[in-house]
Amino acid sequence: MRAIRPGRGIAAALILLTTLAGCGGGGGSAANAPPPPAGPDTGDLVVTVTDAPGDFVAYIVDVTSIRLERASGDTVETLPLTTRIDFAQLAEVTEFLSVATVPAGVYQRVTLGLDFTDAEILIQDDAGAAVPAQVVDGAGDPLGQIEVELSLAGDSAVRITPATVHAFSLDFDLDASSVVDDAVTPPVVTVEPVLLAMPALEEDREHRLRGRLARVDEGAQTVTLAVRPFRHRHGAFGRFTFAVDDATVYEIDGAVFTGGVGLVALNDLGADAPVVAQGRVAGGDFLAAHVLAGDSVHWAEADVVHGTVLARGADTLTLGGVAVAFADGRYTFSRNITVSVGAGTVVSAPGAVDLDERDVSVGQRVAVSGEFTDDLTLDATSGRVRMLVTRLWGEVVTPDPLVTDLALIDGRRPGVFDFTGTGVVSAEDADPSAYQVDTATLGLLDVAAGDLVQIRGLVNRFGFAPPDFLARTVVDTADGVRAATARVGWPGGTATPFAAVAPDRLDLDPAGARAALTVHGRFRPLPLDALALVAPASGVGAYTVVERGGAATVHREFAAAVTAMTALLDAGARLHRLTAHGGYTVADDELTTVRASFVFEVAGSGAAVE
Image (cartoon, rainbow, N blue to C red; front, top):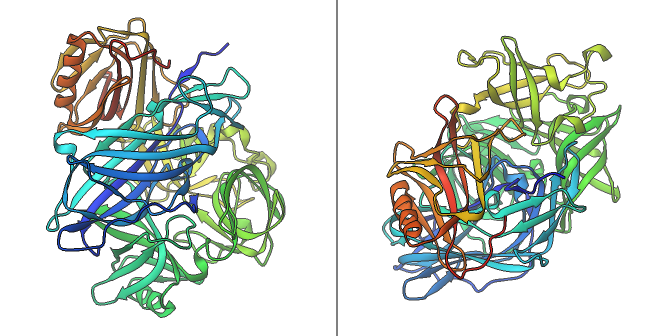
């Protein structure tokens, strides 16, 4: 029997950015109490939601509330409507959720409300198939509505004043919060929530904003949207202004523009046109690299599915891991559906033109709009297929030309894909153990055989392999700030989890522990014999120390977390488990830790979930 494995999952992050006043999921209906009106003593709170790569095929749950609390006990709600979100669809992008007006002050506690009553949780089995899981709490009871609280210590507190801009990031870390038992049928996911937080936006991640067009300022090169996250059609989610520049690419009603010409075309659409903007945050500002608008937005009056092509025929696509958003606002998940395509299907992709339905091949991630003819068939013969940037993880076989032994395709194991028909002839059909990647002019001087890499790009046209994949970027996972996750658990807890302790370093003592180090791109956890958690060069990140049955406190500084844990151990507490994310250095056996959680058992607080 396989052992119960901790944390086979995702790190779902909620990121909040305070600005001056005015500044994959689905809809919801339950309304929360609105925040106070804007005034001279208020600021705006821009709430975004994201995730990190993991092994959940789907993690659909209702987010019911995000509340902040001041030391006086005053609270403010920042989420206007319950919102159904599939966190597994947000592994590589951060989504803007709402903009709420909040009173000035110092907020020292955050509470996240979640409702698992109608949750849809699916994991991958060893063959890569999606398997529904049962979700329970620490006592083994079905999980319903829960609230997760986190105290914000020192520099982690949210300080809002009318005259400053402040950033605050909140992670509901399911990697640290979940224990998956896949030795039973159905698999069981035990959830014991752990939160992380840090007062900063992640500038190394893509961000996405959806909404209705409110204003275009061609002179200032800015666009203002009435925020409509996921497939919400109504609700007071606030307004948000983002920047564009001469390099911004627009797709508007199927036509492609660049720079100022595209901004003029966007303005010509008029108010309330649907818009999706994607780009990055730099210096606290969101700059859009790509903008979709009008009929190019898939949630504009159609049934829409997001998934990965597992196989295809002459005029059909088999999609797996499918997020389904119906035109009436309902949102659900389907393991597999069939999509009909034809000459009337409009196909588009970032940075590509003159595409047709044959450009969609096996392994490609897509968003498809059309009409369901039955529960498992979507007719897109008069609809749209948008090819999305697809991510591969694998080990380099040869660097030039780049050939990889794939571990994951869009988060799924290669065994679930049927590559029949992908090659010019059958003998040249794509082989996931020798997957040929066209790197064009990308510089790969630092990539060598045996390296683990993440590749972003598009799958080559169906029937045209090799090459199998057209790369836009190739990244050695050793350079990733969150390329690895360490999970260590001590059954019954331990009073001596660290062999050595310093303000900027924790050398683990894995004796008696169940431990694993997973590097993204290599699915099977690497054995962990000795490991040191070291602080990043800045010394800051997000480090939560949890006292079972008591307080959960986040520390901004690595050294402050070390001090807090040392005090707990000196007082007789026992460390039960830790989860740490960062960049792993093989030669030094070190994890440069940017985020971590530590769960302690104190006297009388009860048994731990292992």
